[in-house]
Length: 381
Image (cartoon, rainbow, N blue to C red; front, side, top):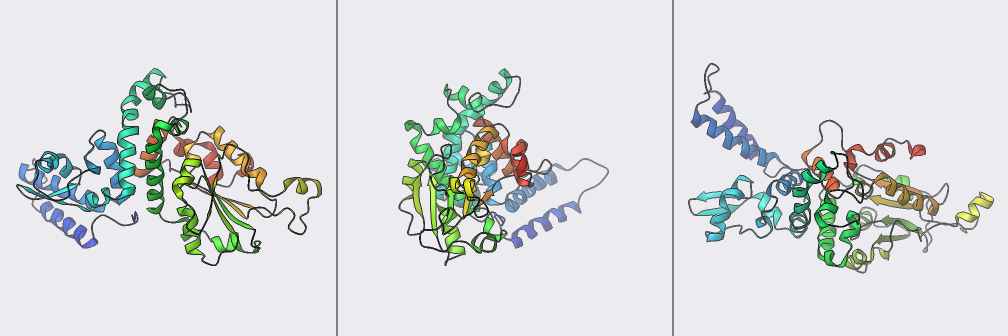
């Protein structure tokens, strides 16, 4: 899913703008807007909004507007069945259907995206798991005087009557299918964004002067989901030397499979000591590194993970990585959302709302730790 493009081609967008402009020539500045022109403007501007949305923003809008409407991941894309007729009005207003005539509807670019496995998984997670949380949110925040939720006290805990933190709850056996949906959705979302490898000089900054022995570790993707990040690295640098290691919780690693000949799957909880590391004891005693005796990973990669956790937990994650890094050799690569205080997109704001629902607070927008990491003040993290 390419989020850099719009749902409709530029020519279609241009035609809509011209039609709106033509209606403008019929308007009088000293009077009421004529009802027929008002209706045409409403329809055209709505159509223009749907046309210029990116797929990612459209899905963000859909997820928060529909709430309990379960149709987007079971929607007939063309037909005249009673089911389609029942869904026609709300689906058309959401941009999921276009009407051909009185009895026929057709798929739209948005509905075609909705039937993709990654999108279906994301919408299912939003409706089935997060939907009840969003409905509970006003009551939950109100009883806490609208203070930000904590990891174990917030809308999610009130909804599911639990004392567990959000991701601890999802790891419970009864939510196994939800966890699979999250993993699949996350990979689709990551694939739908501009790759960090497009703007970060990975080969120059990471691979230059790196250990090229067979047993060397090039990259450890911490909390790397299903491994698409490492696959992307391999596709970008086909001749990369060293091992690529995927780390995530056991169920996720199992879902990722055998690594497809690209990476080594490794079950690991990033709140526990990092098993892939250099021998930091040698460094502390001698401050030198000879004959590869303290060889460690060239880079730890942590992508879109820290915004899922409060600052205290983020520090624990980073502390375990810091201990495992080889001084003067290892690098820490953080690919993360930072929401601007002004002009944030609907999608970015929706991510913050999900984080608040999961009782992580408005993480990406307000976290002092993420801001310090983003702007280089690592010493004060």
